[in-house]
Length: 393
Image (cartoon, rainbow, N blue to C red):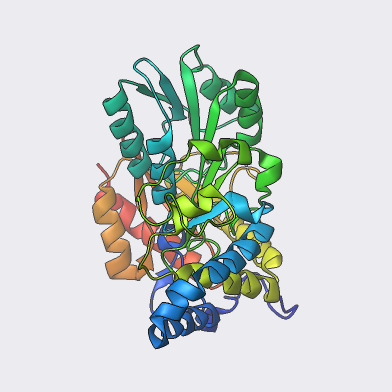
């Protein structure tokens, strides 16, 4: 990062396609891809169209192997323990559908999980007669110990799976998953982690973390093109995985480095360009000192955290510090029409920010990335000050 930049400057704004007139504070939903990475992505698409047979048949295995190698090195994992998927939800569906659950078995989770995955587990449990058990993690959070106790108190002799977000979607909280994974391992409970928001926002070492299964997105905080995610499985657990789409990777005539890779990646005709652009986004982050960018983004969010809580007159939902939030944080709102408030912020202030719902309460989830500056957050605060009274219930 250039020393001439202050925390109030938008870094690298010109390297993104985002509209100049929009205060984009919603990186957490779909990410935003830098221009140099997007150009590499489009170059791969052109390669595919220039000679599809060569690209998708003769070169496929090596292209994907190279892309997995770079991603695995970034995530602290072995390349043959990772397979590319379109998004974290796809990866988690593969895992959930692969696990054998019986009537009375329990899948333990929290009440802060992503709605699509709540639906996935309810669907799976309904078919098997298992129970999807959501433990309440109360807000505001006061300590790691209380979070662990609230979750772990749901463990019984029938607990087969512990499913947790690394960073929660509706409330943007970094959960203390390391301790819970270790406790689950001691009990023989399978651990499945939804890391949709983690890669690129916080440091990861999947081998050290030791979760049985971990899925993540590359198109959110890693800023890859849309449609790039991954599924990581510990070597000892890969025999449990079944293909979500049965294709040429099943009973493969050209076996790859692992059955996981065969079952998940080799599906015949599809555009793999987003996967192949992941090394470019890792290179982009390295070249632009992304550790410093992340720290600067967190500090900018931290500065405005107090302004937002002063405005709402509601306490922060977590203690301050990088152990609890990184570049994304959620703030409780007074009872209000959240959908109308979100629409008004966009229409009147050109602020793109989500209003989420959790347990009947409204929260505003603010993401800060390299292209944001203090004026973006200042506009958000001004908009909330003006609009909250109008949409209170």
